[in-house]
Length: 254
Ligand SMILES: O=C(CO)COP(=O)(O)O
Image 1 (cartoon, rainbow, N blue to C red):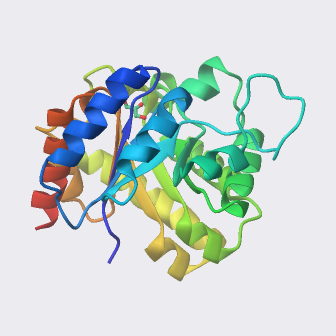
Image 2: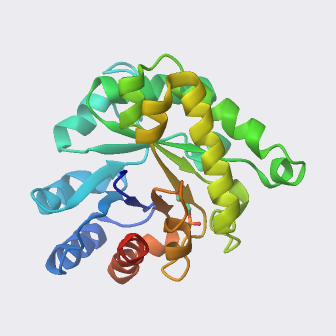
């Protein structure tokens, strides 16, 4: 049985003061069990958050990483640096990075390999644009992205990866995929993993849905057979929102 995983992607929101405030409030609430909970925060806030979240049920995630250990890469952050802070997860290949920062399937793959080799767990984002959705090429797009991202991994490494299926047209738009459609595409992604890495890896890998997930729709997603959690932007920015998302995931699985 795959443990559901709810990850908040704060994107470029929250100062250190705001992040600290959030973490103190969150750790003061009664923790919900049975759901893995992750906060993917801006780089500048990670050290402060690590100090507060250490020893709590809340894991820390980053939103990007470079593939080299060190080097002349101005403005970048290496897997070693994240590991040193106590980061556990790292989002790789978010559509905003693919769209605005020239992230490619090739760099996503290099980053996934680098993250795993340093003991960081990748949350790899895949998903189609509106034009691709409307032309019926969703499956082709997610298959290409998934196969490229996982290229060269062993099946044991694949079991540690989390994939987030985020249709680009559903991100921050309030237009979410239906739970049934998301489940179908996520089932298809799992099938791609099975063809490349075998049944055991496909049964173990966790695949989230992301895109306008809110406390009032999360249960519908988590009740689906293949959806193992959610990667949430806007609704994860308040403590109340985050706790409600986790409560919804727990209720769906309860
Ligand atoms: O991009 C997302 C998470 O990575 C989704 O963002 P929203 O939940 O704000 O739509």
